[in-house]
Each structure stands twice: as C-alpha cells, then as structure tokens.
Image (cartoon, rainbow, N blue to C red; front, side, top):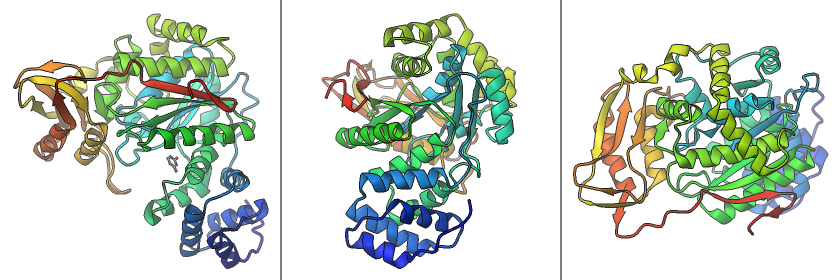
Length: 447
Ligand code: URA
C-alpha cells in the first residue's frame, strides 16, 4: 500500500457527525492513513462512533470493505485449477462445523482455502480448537498456503499480517470503543478478510439465539442479507443459511472437547444437530464448487464422503501436513487421560427443557477455553461436555455435564456457573430443525 492522499480528517469526522456521506476516495484515504499509522486512534474512534450512531450508506459500506480488503494482499489463486469455496460462521457455542466441513468438502473435489479466527466473546474460535491437536500449526507463509491447497485441496490457517491488516487494527479499536455491533462494520470486517483469500464462492452460516454473536433473529436476518449482497457486489457467489444457536451445538464445548467431537463426526458418529448443519453447509459448498447440481445431490455426496471414510482420510492428510500428530486424532481418548474433571449432577428428577448456550459458552471461556483478555493463553483441554439435551428426562444425581481442564483450579467455580444453564420443566418444544432459512439472490426461502 502506498500513496496516502492528504485528507482533512477532522472534516470527515464532522461530516459523519452531521449525518453526511463520504465518497469512496475519502474512505479509501482514511483507511489507508489509519493502516499506515498516519491517523491516530482517537480520531478513528470518533469517526467510528459517529458512523455507528448516524449510519452508513450502502456505497460507503462497499467502499469501506474494498479499502479494508485492499489494505493488504488480495490473493490470486487462479493458477490453481478448480473452484475455491470457503465457509464463514458468525460463531456459536459448540460450533465445530468448520473442522468437519473443510476436509469433507475437499474430499469431494472442491478446494477449501480457509482462513479462520480465534475465540470471540463467549463463542469459540476454529484456530484455538485446531491448535489443541498436538503439533498442529495454523501459521504458514502465503507460499506454503498455496502449495498445500494445490497438493491436498484444503488448508486451514489464521489471519496473517498480509491479509486485511486494516481489519486487525480497526477490530481492536472497535472492541474498546463500543462500536462492534454495527452491521456495516461487521460486514466489512468479515468480508474484507474472506474476499482477500482468493475464493470464488462463500457460504455463510449466520446464527441467532443466546449462543450467537447476534441473539435476535431479525438482526441476524439483516446481517445475512447484508453479507450476501455485499459478497455478490464483489463478484463472489455468496449464499447464507440462517441457523438457530439458542442451545449449544452438539455436546462438546471448548477446544479439545470439540476436536474429539469433530473426530466422532468425521468417523460417522456425530450428533444429529451438528451433522444436520454440517451436511447442509457442505451441500451448499459443493453446489458453489460446481460438484453438485442440486441441494439433494450435495447432501448425498457429503453423506457418502463420511460413510466411505474419504472425509476422514482428508482430515488425516490435513493434520499431518500442518504438523499435527496422527496418534492424537486416531486415539483421542489417550489425550483425555491428562484432563482433570468435575461433574454437574441433576439437582432433582425432571425434564431438561433448555440448555442456555450463552451461560455454557461463558463458563467455558472462564475455564480457559477462550480469552478474557487478548493476551490470555488458552488451555487446550478446557471445556464442557454435555451428557443431555433438551427433552431428556433425568433423575436426581444423574450426570448432566463434565467440566474439564488441564488443572483443577477453576473446576469448582465453573460447576456453579454452568448449573443455571440447565432449565427444567414440564414441557419442551424441540425445534424440528436448526436450519431456519436460506438467503441467496436477494430473497429468503421462507420469509
Ligand atoms: N467477526 C468479524 O470478523 N468481525 C466482526 O466485526 C464481527 C465478527
């Protein structure tokens, strides 16, 4: 990036404060100036808050996304034959689908270059989960990223300094200035990174409910529409599924507990809710990759990949290529021997009617599965494994969940925090499906 154009930063702040609109060039210069360290945090903070309170036009949002994407390298993978498709989830408690999906879809012949993030708030991060596999590295050069994609069709890494550096700085500033929950900023942040990956298509999993980043369904719908339309404006085929994240997804929450559950899923023993969402997202990716012509064909291919063991073989290749040990994924129970554990027992006879995902997610973070502060290190073994789901009837003293970590320090405190997540009652409405809707080409399937 070079050639920062002198702009009157105060004028841009005043214009947003007075509900005005900025041009594409003004936004480009502003983002460039910030990335190069020529505009200080306090001025960008004021601009963020003014935009947050007074809104942004669609053109401003497109310009912001474009400037953030072009603040670093925009990868060109066109010399590697085949369509490249990625998936992005807005995050949820127990959402381990990326770990299953990436090798699954690659095993069906669609290239998956995946750049993921770390834990955010009460939701976990794919990188922290992958790094709980002993030896697994999520850092590599762009050259190695390209070679691995070409050789085995799948690569899973963290954001590098070369990809959308403006987002890294802006996200850190939004986090401490109360300007995170604003759809244009969220959309620009997510898409600037994804569009810089060199993909042809993107499948989004936009979640709502207590375990999601956005709890309200209408807000999540708006976010799905914004992300999808924005992706399309940049020439990337984009589709979004809207999924219910009110209760934890699957039984494992935390880093190694989610890897252990992903292993079970890849070996054909996954819980129904995780597999439902995984197969639906896989089918979308296979259609976007040109390998399936219909949703049903995509589902069939995805199920076959699990049944025949092809998805598992691809996962083994991925783990070995990124430095992980085969022993740890082939015998996950061996690693479990190192954990310290405590159990949550049912306080009375009754029916579990709901398990609050946010409470479980927060408790897992407090236990060490995520970060309270950016500098915190994560405990790979920390997490919570549920033994029941909504609708199950239990007797007093039955185990409801296991809490685990590398040491005993926080087990007792976490037990008290998790117990209120279990709600008991007479009746329980179990949703027929976690998948609520699908948005593409400007419309919802079930508006
Ligand atoms: N995830 C991101 O990458 N950015 C946001 O702003 C919110 C969620």
